[in-house]
Image 1 (cartoon, helix red, strand yellow):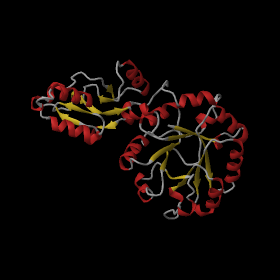
Image 2 (tube, helix red, strand yellow):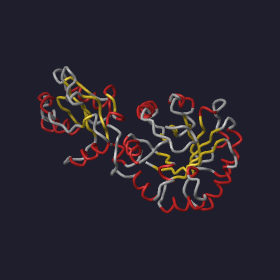
Image 3 (cartoon, helix red, strand yellow):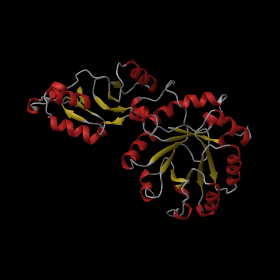
Image 4 (cartoon, one colour):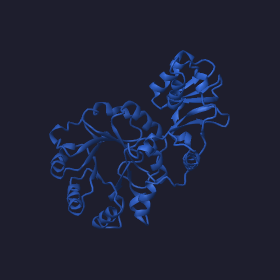
Amino acid sequence: MKISASVYSNKEKTLEALVQELDRYEVDFFHIDCNDNPAVFKDIAQIRSLSKTPIDLHIITAEPEKYFDGIAETKPELVCFQYENLPSKLDLSSIQNGVTRFGLAIQADTSHLVFDDYKKNMDFILFMATSPGKSGGTFNQNNFSKIRQFKKYYPQAKLHVDGGVNDEVSFVLRSMGVSLVVSGNYLVNADYIGHAIHKLRSNNIASHILVKDFMVGLSDSPVLRYDNFNFHQVLNAIEVFNMGFTMLSDASGRLEGIITNADVRRGLLKNITNLNLLDPVRIVNRNPATINENCTVSELIEKIRSLSFPALFLPVIDDNNTIKGTITFNNLIKGEA
């Protein structure tokens, strides 16, 4: 996951000093909020003279066309327009330059489905987790479910998040497959910017966010009834949900075990000469690793570290061993969405 530093969030340092300091710690992008002020391109030109770090430009305007010449001249690597301010559907065909990737920024109360009209011409969406253009807000955890829904509807689009991103939120967003986070006050106003960048990329964090706040919910998790399932259903659940496993529950929803891709492979090898002898009950792991829904992110990380095998997922349960959802770690293992 990339980190984009919001350079206008710091009012104490000169732009030159801040850019040079952020470059020393190898930030991935410089994020620039433009609240309807074309003079922003002067700052972009200054940054270009100081650094090779890519530009991430967020434009809030009702007149997007007046920015087209500046975009064509400075070629920011990322440009997104605030959806709520646009007068109509935006035509970007005249400023496609082979360098700039375009996106749509939306506020927290705007449906992610507005991206549907832009998905053919835009590469990413920017979720505003606090008020657009304002620094120092608190991340709204309702955005976790919104992120899940967006990735479900638009799996090919990149997802960026801006607003209230600290080390704890950064870890969760990384695990959810977010491609880029914008960090303002937490990063550029830190006493030690290098330490703040390290924490945004680290797994060693203090946490108050709970597993249930960002897990894959039960309706989107693979679950079969233990007392009435067959091998075909197992394969279908693994294929449809694309998580590499399926969970098995009793009539009350309590976890009875799981079957993973590896369990299926071992079962097939053991019965390769006569697959009719393969009893799916015999390949169930009746004692899988799990995580409680009320565990914090820190406790989740400690759980992962305590396991003797690399965890790709964990069933999420409550105090009664009832299945509540799933946590997956594919994006953490890949390192970047």
